[in-house]
Image 1 (cartoon, protein in one colour):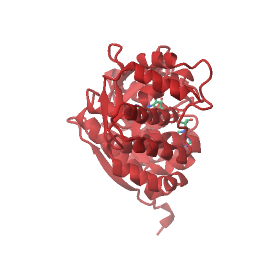
Image 2 (image 1 turned 60 degrees about the vertical axis):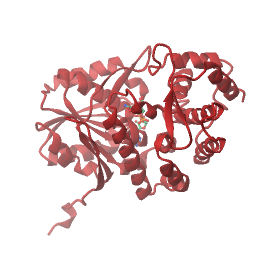
Image 3 (image 1 turned 90 degrees about the horizontal axis):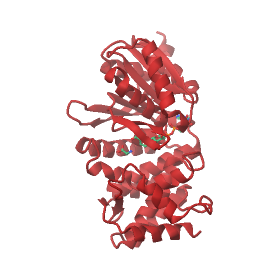
Image 4 (image 1 turned 90 degrees about the vertical axis):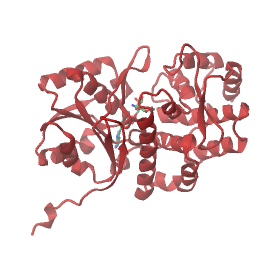
Amino acid sequence: MNLSREKPAADYETVRVDLPARGYDILVGQGLLAETGRHVGAVARGRRCAVVTNEVVAPLYLDAVRASLEDAGLTTEEIVLPQGEHTKDLRHLGDLADRLLEFRIDRACILVALGGGVVGDIAGFAASIVLRGIDYVQIPTTLLAQVDSAVGGKTAVNTRHGKNLLGAFHQPRLVLADIATLETLSTREFLAGYAEVVKYGLLGDADFFSWLEREGAALYEGDHAARRHAVVTCCAAKAAIVAGDEREAGRRQLLNLGHTFAHAFEAETAYGTTLLHGEAVAIGMVLAFELSVRLGFCPSDDAERVRRHFAERGLRVGLEGLADASWTADSLLEHMAHDKKALGGALTFVLARGIGEAFTSSAVEIGTVRTLLEDALRV
Ligand code: NAD
Ligand code: GLY
């Protein structure tokens, strides 16, 4: 008996995104990459797949994914993109689409997006337009992608007019979130993803936020059970929201908690590496709670808990060391007005009546927001 050839079975939990005709499973656990072939094979219409990844993720995980796909009888083509947010543009989308067409793909082929949110967003968008739409699977390898971008079918690229302005809703056939991939993530990227984890507690699950207050350090230090519980909880929360509001007409807007502010900070820093998306969202959520306090909706103790938790975990909670003299309340408001979430120039804010009780409002006086921003900039 040759035991060395036996691979340990993956240990995972399943979350269902319950959409009529487009429902799919999110598998969260460890060892899933080694089982990619079995899971992709179960949802694929044919036996051919194209794996899209990037130059950072490929040396780490592409061999395991390819071997598993081939073991399951799937043939693979591979496209390795450069890494970085700049990859999410029309030029790279065009190149990616051309490469897929060069492979003479047909509608029975399935695309596999292996990487963080950048790879997932551009590969998902390519899948939505090539041959008017082919199936795809998300294999998210960052914390942010596992708890947010790989779930829910939003796909996009950036244009010179702004971020994520060209895209489509195109649900994946399957999401495989192997938490073992988080072990190679930098501390900074992990923390940026952690901000999105906290978001789920703040918007609708006070008990989860309390759990994060207790277990956040363990999560950060690599505790597998804690990481898995966090990813499963976030995916279940997002799955429920998406199942009820796929196109963001209502409750899905709550997922934008902190994002209107974050968008302005990211625009000021030109979407570069000065401020990662999750880092901007953490500051944005602190401000959204502060705004809720000023508007009389939220107890100040709750806003303080939010600020303290992010600070304890090592995330920025304000604009200190970030904003220079060119940042003004008006320039930030201008960026907010150009956010695609603004409707007819009216800003919608996600506010909170307390931790776990978010709601949306389009009736916030802009003067209150201006004063809040002026105070935030007075550092
Ligand atoms: P990212 O994809 O740029 O990944 C961050 C960095 O980590 C990159 O350098 C990447 O190469 C590297 N990396 C990825 N996996 C790794 C691993 N396991 N080990 C080591 N390094 C690894 O960034 P992100 O934070 O995952 O995603 C951000 C993008 O997601 C943005 O473009 C944002 O607009 C988008 N987004 C989309 C949605 C959505 O609903 N579609 C939601 C939130 C964010
Ligand atoms: N990341 C926000 C959403 O998926 O709606």
